[in-house]
Length: 466
Image (cartoon, rainbow, N blue to C red; front, side):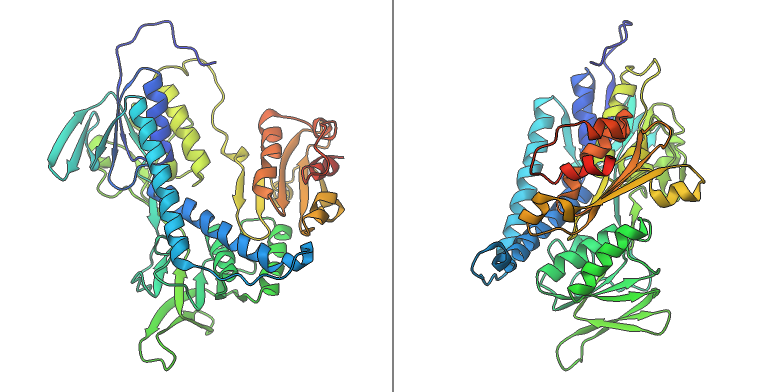
């Protein structure tokens, strides 16, 4: 239970620029703690990166997953069913999900007394925010300012993005038309999710991999499982190739073609190209210099409390340059509200980004948390690594999907769980158990002695902890 300081304070005026997961969570929590809160959002309440990127992509992946399940029906004792994608129905479904989520967030803000302004906010001084709306401008004085303006897809100079044939991620949820052959540039988390998604829909897919493995920042053993799955599904992998130019051919005999020229001379040709090469912070035009807020490469420099170089100005979400995850942004917003309202005067638990769980919604799913095996070895740390495949699980066999494994990294002296990786069905859900163990300092014995449901995939967690 959070307790207020005994010292009485006047109502604090909190102004938040950006209504994504960080901004909305900060707004509702600060309002509950007694602040006078104003939230400024220029696009979509709930966050463009969240509601226009993250949620639509997962909805599309869920549809692709349903198609894959139906196509594998015979292995489950069912007659074969031919499944056809209804692209317009999918588009309607995504719009409906986005609308319901935005409405839910807006209603929550209203119920907490948060003033919501539709407009573009910027700093004019350390304690003043100017809001440009359709009807004019307004200047708001603030005791606390929170910057959570998010990010947008990175577009290099050599990429002629038109939103039709050459797409950013934000153009593709869903794209104007289903690609016949999609060339994806970028083999990080977003890139591989797009490969899985459109391959599930029936598109041919080529993936440009600038290094020698997909998911270059992940455990090689984890990445190899995904690579094998991609190759089995007919995905073309251009490893060790870095895209450096894109050409759109309007005169091709079979309709418009797009060519991606790589630095090693290889050329990938398709009907559409998708850029998945990272993002850049939305800090331009924010007026950081007017308030004396320090930044680096467009990201606001923050401390462990998400405070900027100006004590009462905070930054959260993608703008903070920390992990670009909605879960992290939401927690940052909550922590900022507590700190700004004086609840963290005494020592408290700070956000530990090294203990954040993350997931990749491919097939199979991939999830991890905490210390990775490769990083431990690189740092010379002594660890114990145990791994159990899902093929030993009765539930995996019942699901007709025994792919993947659970890997747990622990301290050999104390047994404390330090990290783990999961590859397989429902990995994004199962990783929560390991995330709790890592955060709470639980041991492998705690997992072994837990009474999991049988039959369930979670049983493999206990077996991996043995």
